[in-house]
Length: 374
Figure 1: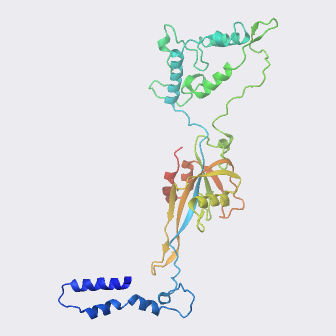
Figure 2 (figure 1 turned 180 degrees about the horizontal axis):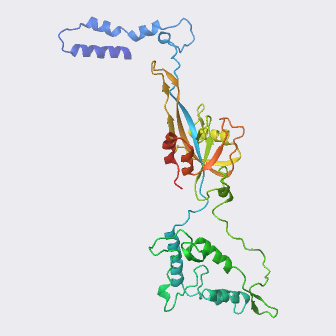
Figure 3 (figure 1 turned 180 degrees about the vertical axis):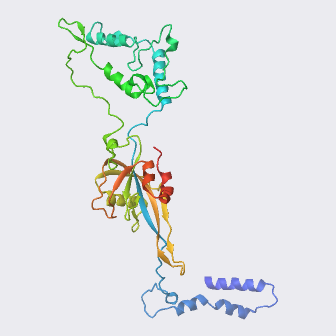
């Protein structure tokens, strides 16, 4: 017995067992089950050609109309230069770190000079001369205070430049030390440079001889003073240089077509992802003379320009733009807009506050939260 006949008999038994008002006879049941409607439909779709045909002729329809999407997708790049210096210390931080140094000076074990310097050598004599000038304090930048003695309780850091009302004067502190006196970084640098001068040399008989004021001492190399935080680019106001505002994050801003400023951006092409599109846009915008790195595969922000529709017909007249910004870092090189593909004319490296002054208010409302405060 074939599978089809078994199925027919099973279906017939179901029909017989059904309690209904209208009874179906056996001959009618066999006739209903023998009708293979799917086979008839397949026969009607049979083509005269013996080769297989994957096209369903009965379901042929016209191609769908080409519709224009209301938005264009763009990939933007938030290229940054990270801070190169720590932020300037506040008055409280200066006083706190200075206090910690003096506290460590008191809690540390006494400085054993002869462990580091052989007795009666020029190095030992040099140390004794400098230690005598700072009242025997081992640290070089803490000033000549007396950590041990009857007046040791009164050696706290006295802030210079205070008026009678307790406020800080606008002018600098006494002796040009600044508002925080001995805790000012410039004073610490000057003290360390002064301490580095040679104060004792070896005499003709081998004994140590103190160097007097005005004596010429041969040294291997001149001491270099640390560079200032305020660079030449800051003084000249050159916004295209990367060596400005060293304590802040800088962002690459370009002048777009029509005179507006914004971050580099371009349309996503083909099957590109945002990461790949951002890399391409950066090269097409600022050239290849930069060592950059696109951070991650997820955008850090977006900007939307809504499409323009005709009020009467409702048809789309101008596409909107959705720009997704990827974060990037520049590690070396410089931007070069020569031959760029977007018609850009200028670029600047700006801080977050400076970006706000260059871009439109609507643009700023979209991009302000993806930039760091410092």
